[in-house]
Image (cartoon, rainbow, N blue to C red):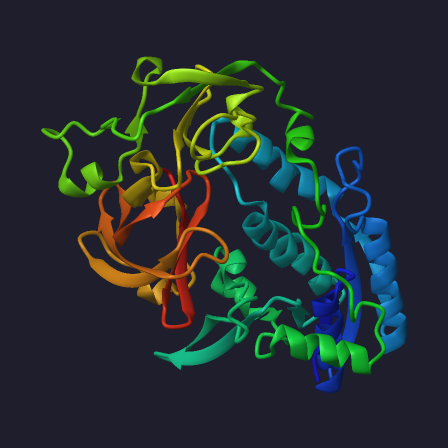
Length: 393
C-alpha cells in the first residue's frame, strides 16, 4: 500500500481517480490547489474556484479521505501568468496547460505531496503510464489515454522521468462514459458536472481582459493579403539549407496588402485566429496569417485554404527540445520519423525530425495550418509520447 495524494480539482475525473486509488488499497489524501485570486476577468458562471473547491470537499467527505486546500497562487503567477504575459508581448502564443502540468502539478504540487509523505501523486488525466526495464534501469513510458476523444497526453508532453516516476493516472484506461458511470454509482456530486474549460486552474476567462491586466491596448492596422500573393521568407536561398528554407516564417510588409480594419493590439492575436477581428464584408472569413508586435500590425487572409496559413515544417531551438524518453533522444546528424501534433486534439500527422547543430527541424508529410510560435509540438511512436518542444517558428 502506498500513500497517494490526489489532486482533487472539483471535477468528475479526479473524483473517480481518488476512488480508484482507494479501491486499490492505497492511503489517499485529497488536495485542492488554489492558483488564482483575481476574479475580475473570470466568467463567474463558468466553474469559479470556490465552487470547485466545495465540490472537491464534498467528494472527499463522500469517499472518507482527508482533504485540504493549498494556495499556490504566488508560484502560479510567477511560473505561468508572468510567462504568458511575456510570451504574448513577444508575439508568441503560450500553452498554459502544458506549463501548468510541468511547473505546478508535477513540480510545486508534487513537492507539497512529498512533504506530506506521499509516494505518488494521482491526477484525473486521460493518459497512461507504463514502466519498463532497459539496461537495468526503470524507464517510464507516457501513453495516450484509451479514450481517443479525451486523450490528454499532449498536456503532459513536458514531463520528465523523475516526475513520471511519482505520477499515477488511474482513469487512463477508461472511457469518459465509464468514468461518469462510476461517479454516478458512487453518488458523487461531480457525476454530471460539465468538464471545465479555459486556463488551467483559472477557468474560463475573457482572454483580452486577462491580457489587458498587463498588456495595454494599442490601435493598429489589419492588413489583408491577397490569396495570389507569393510570400517571402527570411531564408536567403543562397545561404539557407533545404530544411531551413522549408520552415522559415513568411514575411509581409504593409505594401503587400490593403488595410481592411483596425485592432486593439497585435499581441492579443495568434496565427490561425478567426474570431475577434471584427472585419465584415469579405466573401470568406479572415484568418490571421502573421503578427508584427514591433510595428503593431496584423496580416490576414481570406479562407482557411489561404497559402499564407500553411507551412511544411517548424523549428525548435536546442534548449527547447525535451525528450520524455531520454534514451530515444536524437544525436546531431540523426533523423527519425514520428507521428506528431502541434495542438491539443489535432489528429496525429506524419513527419520527420532532423537533429541539426542549430536545433531540431520537423518536416511534415503534408503542409500544416497555423503553426504557431510558443506552442508545443509533440511526437509519438504508436501510442507513446516520446518527446516535445516549443515551436520557435
